[in-house]
Length: 435
Image (cartoon, rainbow, N blue to C red; front, side, top):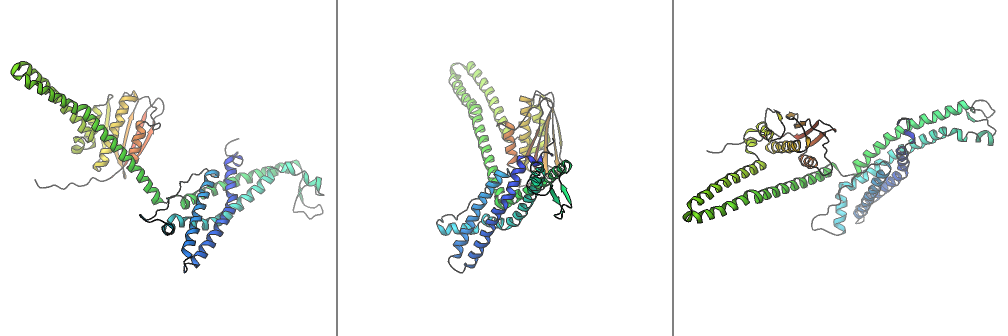
């Protein structure tokens, strides 16, 4: 039996139908409370009782919203995050501040709107579920109970359009029993699809009126993105500090000590002093190379001067496998976006070198509408994923912090295609200063 034919008997259908049935008592209670509470408190606004009573009504409707989100989570498998909490004015506490926050909160009024709008819909869902389940299950289970009609009454079976004197149509033979079962199943099948559609509307109501507002959700997303950016920046600073301390700084300290020893040997053994100076000269070259590599890791000069094409060609030469670079851009994006694309490609090529066992890789960059697209493909063993705290997971988080996306297609055995989409932002025009 296919999934579609099992639809009326699935646990999901039972939960969604139960949600529709419970809509009526819950919706009725919320509607009566909202209409009565808001009407009475509005009528008493001319007295000192009106505002506190209205605040209490709104607080109760917010609590009802918590119960409705829990009901949707259990019966509809729809987890709606709670809305933003009450925000009191800084430095203000006490009942008046709490009451003002409740009256100003858009969450409170959206909870009231839910109580008022949900009740008419609740009546509709209740009637549909009762009708579908009563008719469908009664006919589907007809073979289990139809024998009670001739046993305990004078009728031969279930009568349709009968006159009480035995005239009319009676469902009393095996064929008609089977027909009733079939009709019951069809009613349940069509009704369950209808109930599922109404459950989708219920999910929209709960999400739209009892969840966080679009502005609040965006603010939470921005706060999360900001924390990702801050963490990434802190990690980069720690890396730069470590590279300076363990690399160029240690080499320069050793260089200073060697030059000090060479100065002491200058009068006693000029030839040894000359050899020590020569060795120090080599250390200076190595220190300069390390500083250049470190500066390139912060922001390469070739990217600033010549753009993504030459910069990506440069990092492609450092990859352990041959890399083809294809950049199709008529204009350059904003410096920040260009830098993110560069470091994304750099990290992806490092993964190709370390993990892919590939023989060839390709970097493609192009613009599509308001997106800068970067795609890295290799013919390696595949199996790349962005779960379990991998480097790709961190890269996806950093891209999401600037409204970017990372798509990974890497079946076992390869090939691997990783696509990064970044928002296109125009490059700011540079104003030439006085020479």
